[in-house]
Image 1 (cartoon, one colour):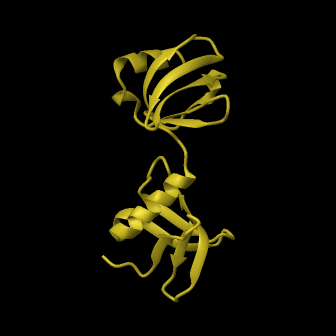
Image 2: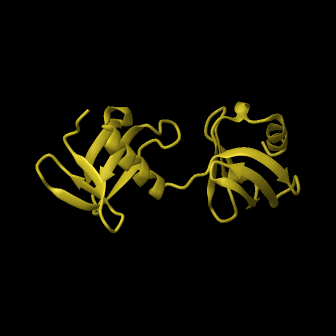
Amino acid sequence: MSDPFSLSFNPLGQLTVELPDGMLHEAAVAVRAFPIAAPQESVSILSAEGKELLWIDNLANVSASNQKVIEKALQMREFMPEILRLDSVNSFSTPCTWRVQTSRGSTEFVLKGEEDIKRLSGHTLIVVDAHGVQFLIRHLPSLDRHTRKLLDRFL
């Protein structure tokens, strides 16, 4: 598969876009339109000034080399670890400290209040810690029994 555009990183680690007309844009930014609901769809590549350079309906429609560059650019920009397991909670009243296993390793954080657990859908939650870091729970029913039992105390 060949794309009419080319994506790469310059020596400073910035995303570079070469458009079909030969225009080269440095310090571009990749942004997902729906990072939780449809992470592989609707990706925009913006110039350093915020002007949209490219719109990608689905990453599967892009060449493998450009897909890798886009994924790396998105990872550098986005930080939302996914909670895979809740190991312990020091208290069932808030504020409390949660020890969790995430897609980025184990960590602990302080949950200030129950209002910092936001339900996005029947199965998807966002948990915001005391520092404003957002943690994703993508599919609540797929979590282990221990984790669901602890979470039930807060939902």
